[in-house]
Image (cartoon, rainbow, N blue to C red; front, side):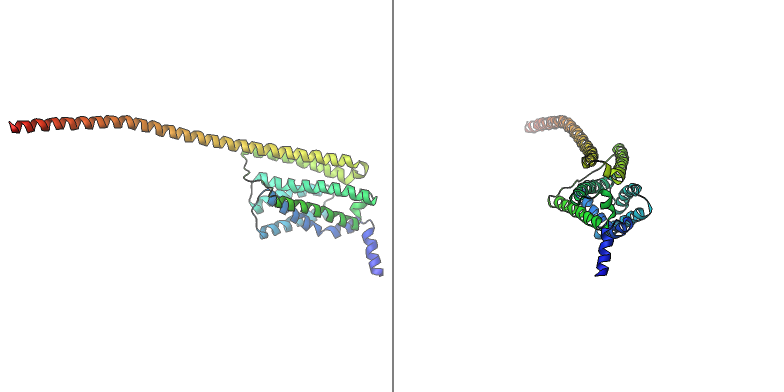
Length: 287
């Protein structure tokens, strides 16, 4: 009984290091749910081996950052590591690599802020207590992962995905620039959430994340529209070349028709001439 009391006391007492250690295994769960989300939405073909390898590698990087590099700077490294791993493991294009980072991150940030604010309001605790008390941190994290996983199930059920995303060099550079700006925005947001959440109203934090989310949506939407326009232009160019080929064939057929008529007339004339000569010879023999 005394051991259980000691454990309960440790779980309900503020201890940032203990909370970090206890919640470390959840990093693998977060990486796994993130991988499920971006492979489903982006229609990335994968295998269980690649999926597990991504989860292990990303989780190891995240844990190293978490224990060695202080918050929120570790978030910045995680943001860089994700698209690099996606690029080399899943062999996809730059756009999908960046979206593989953005989409799950937005889900976790928005759900995390909502759950965090509701949880702290329900238990009348500060954000500092929520993040440093093991029991609160575990429960809150499980709520976040549960809600995000439910979002993934809805995405899979309704078959929400993006297919055939290709970019030229110009749009790739534009996307990378937007991604860098987005990273800076996420970095600032993580810094605010980490150090100033308790001093700012919940509506300010939620508005900040919402604006950032809208920025990413507009960026992605604009790029997808650009891709569709490029695809339409390619189709129009193919149709133009096809029509040009048909025009050339039509001109050749017209030329052949004209030559064919001349050939038929020549043959007809030749036959008529031969027939007349034959008739003359025939009448000559009779005479």
